[in-house]
Image (cartoon, one colour):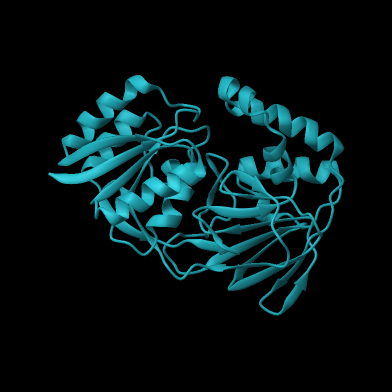
Length: 292
């Protein structure tokens, strides 16, 4: 049997304690002997992931949202412990990108016989991200979501916060230094993964295994620009807009505005500036289904 642990976030949107036993049975079918460990927050998640590395486990499974998965990946990077993503949050972007079912038991059946694949990580200051780092209206929306409402309504709570913030957003400019260029967009996305906010593909050419990051710049200044971008994103035509630019990003530096609000893999934060953004030196091995 392969030794493994399963971290679960009791507060994540789709998690239900009754799903743990069927998940264990599904992973046992692939030879994993599983120990359950409930996380009490990011710091506790890091401690549990460090324990997995210290005990030389074969795999660490995460049943929770993308934020919990990101925290675990930041610790497992560069180690031989394989990371398994089981959907248990609100949007489950990484699980969707891997083609996993959104039911955690069905996803566990797929991962039980999956294969490790090397995934790049982005770096922003001292933190890493699996999916994207972005600044603009989306970060403002995520910061405005009521956690209690999110637990009850899921994506509905995000939509409600999005409407409120769209009506009062003033489109401040960011100042970015990107591979020698000085750029001033009103929004940006540094993408390691194409998938974004669930089923959308924010940068269609972004891949997590090509040792590069991609940068999307949004230059719109009006609410109708933001609405048009959102509608075009849903239709997969946003990169053709005149106020959108996509470039390969070797290294970026965010220098303004002071107090800028960003989001990293769905978690909002205010970084200290200047913020250095680049590809992380270490990667993580992510378990993927054979069909991915």
